[in-house]
Length: 391
Ligand code: EPS
Image 1 (cartoon, helix red, strand yellow):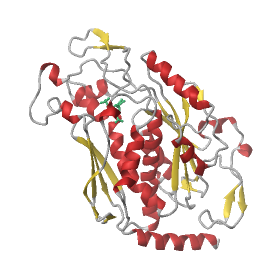
Image 2: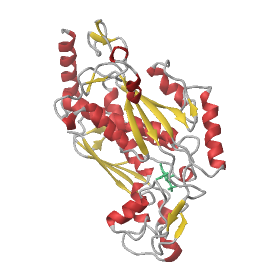
Image 3: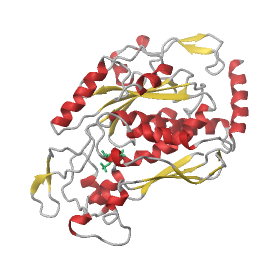
Image 4: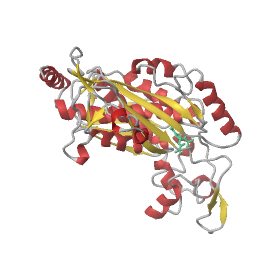
């Protein structure tokens, strides 16, 4: 069983990730993780923080001589900005006045208010430090290990931005294996050259208006054999696990698989993916679908077609022209706290979505094919492919 948990505060020592149940025998280089950490920091619309940080992984356990050991893996991404926050974030000594950077004017749409009520904090900083999307650096590090494991089985994932504000891309006809190179050419990770400048203009306008923007990312994963996940128990359903992993990314408000909500407009005859017998692709198996409206999932299991999912992120909560709020000490009407923030972090979401999916699907591979070593997984994987190709 693959499990992972993160720890860390946005302006504390760093972002940490504990991964248990990761198979032995996967060869890795630091760049396999650092590349994705750097990608997460990029994107038009990011704020000043990314100029301070240069996220790099520090492996504290579980990897020896560039090979995973089968033992728990502990990863750290140290925060450079911590130097500027030592006093406010000190684990032992309380700081006072300006230096404490106390926040009592919660931002609408952030975790500030409810978190303070729930945990009994009188300082919203105790909430926002952990609720911050900086936590996604830890997930991206864990996701990088899982991507590398999936690559051993020729599974790949690419996410790209399909909407920012009212700028919408047209990318349905772009093959999945071209999404990576096309999105890497774009500062907003958009594969549609015509929509890209409209997205950049939308972010620029929002920034000038001291506002923020959300958007939609689409991810596709390919190289998946049929039969990952299961229909037999609610908490083992793979589409549900992918949805949970994606919905838990900060600011995500919706996830749809395949046609998603657009399934409501169609009769069954125009929605269901018809089945044909078409041997030839060993991984997909001999049965194919004539379309992929279900996004590569039937009965909460992979079908062998590409897994397709879209994720919507709300606009970032911190506005430079703050919305109405309440001072929690005086109960007076006031404006929400203004903290340095991003105008739009949707391009970064693409990298985080890929990482979140890599973790869920790596876990599904380990369940199906065994989790002690990569070599054992490969033996079981080959035997399974032999079996399905005889059906
Ligand atoms: C983030 C770092 C943060 C924010 C962002 C995510 O840095 P700081 O708060 O120091 O500017 O830029 O967090 C949010 C927008 C949020 O709402 O939590 C990062 O590294 O991704």
